Image (cartoon, rainbow, N blue to C red):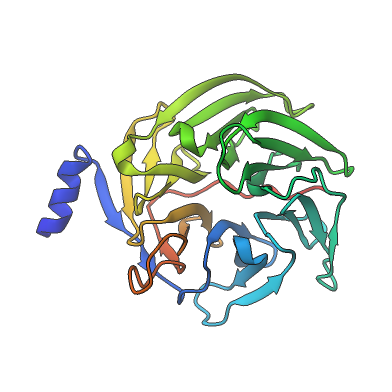
Length: 302
């Protein structure tokens, strides 16, 4: 063990520490929302404020890029092909044959608020949450798009709606409103999708950064990307830190399990707020194999 690694082990209270490797060139300004598309056998993620969806087959050099709107906040595959996308003020669908984008009616008119992160529950309902561009407290909302095209308000009074992920059974959802510094859990009614019984599962110490995107593994571990922290942390279901993946760039945004065995962890990063000439790998995609497998991605059923 080299001295640098030993220092980090002490800093983190003796938990295992490893490092992710860079696997693409810098390809985003604000990379976000990675998701493994099993049917297409590729990773997809977004360059959020450029409105682009990126697609990449691991091991290849080329990255496909499609502009879908002014903002591409979060994506999930659709059961019948194509994608559902959280765009600036609502939702959009891409056609599986042509890739054409159809934006659904906007959910609000205020130009100072945009969508941010999102994901699908086990019944194929797509959730995406909003935030004010200036991150003003309480101006965000978590919305749900059902397979029949109807939309519903799930949570109000959110500030920066971020990572959201469901357990394997679909009866518990984990959720991040970043300024709280916490990952909260809710009970979920699988039939109605209703959230209840909110409680805090993880409190991220301020020195480690701000919780952003998250993913779950098959053992119930929560993998939390740390904006400003340069790392992804794994927490046990009881909220204990037990593994650290160092990334390098400080603006770590999100993570997702992928690959045919779901044993690869992919991590997105951002260049936002990074001075020119600093952190030359910020905006690239990173990868590691942490020794556990993730849960399969739920697709949008609409």
